[in-house]
Amino acid sequence: MDNEMKTSKAKRITYQVLLYTSLTIFAIFIVIPFYWMILTALKSDIDLVVAPPILFLKPGDIVFQNFVDAFARAPFGRNMINTVLVAFISTTGTIITTVLASFAFARLNFRGRELLFLIFLSTMMIPGEIFIITNFNTVAQLGWLGADEIAQTYRQALQAMTFPFMTSVFYIFFLRQTFKGIPDELYLAAKVDGTSDFKYLWKIMIPIAKPTIITITILNAMGSWNAYIWPNLVIEKSEFRLVTDGLRNAYTELAGGTIYNEQMAAALIITLPLLIVFLLLKSHIMRGVSRSGIKG
Image 1 (tube, helix red, strand yellow):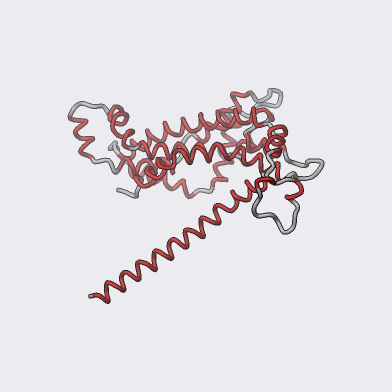
Image 2 (cartoon, rainbow, N blue to C red):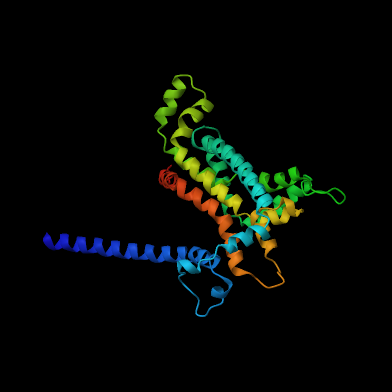
């Protein structure tokens, strides 16, 4: 008996050592690019070209002028406003469609529900490039790209950047799993009391699923903030562009070559808002993920 307990304890310790070692190695590979971005953004022009490269900066060697130069060169003001507006519109639309669709698939009984949900899930297997082609054709037919003699308006630019992405099959599946975990007895009791489906959704299901909804909100906002390919396809005027494309245009083909430390400072500026939001709401994200286990 003692030998079995010792063997079991040894296996458990070995498993934990391997697990935490693997997680540590994985975390290092995740953190290194961010550390290198911050390190490069704080280097002077001389420290940037030193060989071998400097891995740690002394307090006296830190340079903040790169951030000042980045603000002066890159059009952060207008591009940042565009990005925030696109993220807000896209995320708001996504939350509305996701909540309603998830409620229908999780709670409402209608003919063909499971088949329709299966069809929805099957679209996740389609490469995203296919949707780019179809979405571009749709946006063009709606006239949101402007015409030969009529320039694209700001409203059309916002519609082109947001409307094709106001829903997500993955988010619907994600939230549906949380809704499926809510006991049926609550729904039956609410119906006995004469509660409408919408009121039940608003008063009971949404508060219970709040961490999951917050997680979806953050993930979708991050996707909108980091969007590059689609906005670059549908936007004509430079004043309509987002921070990602504005950053690229600001540091493309500079006369003196690529200014890596200033470019990394600019990249850090547009990364900080997302990082701050994640750190403030990470507990909600963890709870949202843990509640959305695979059920039913």
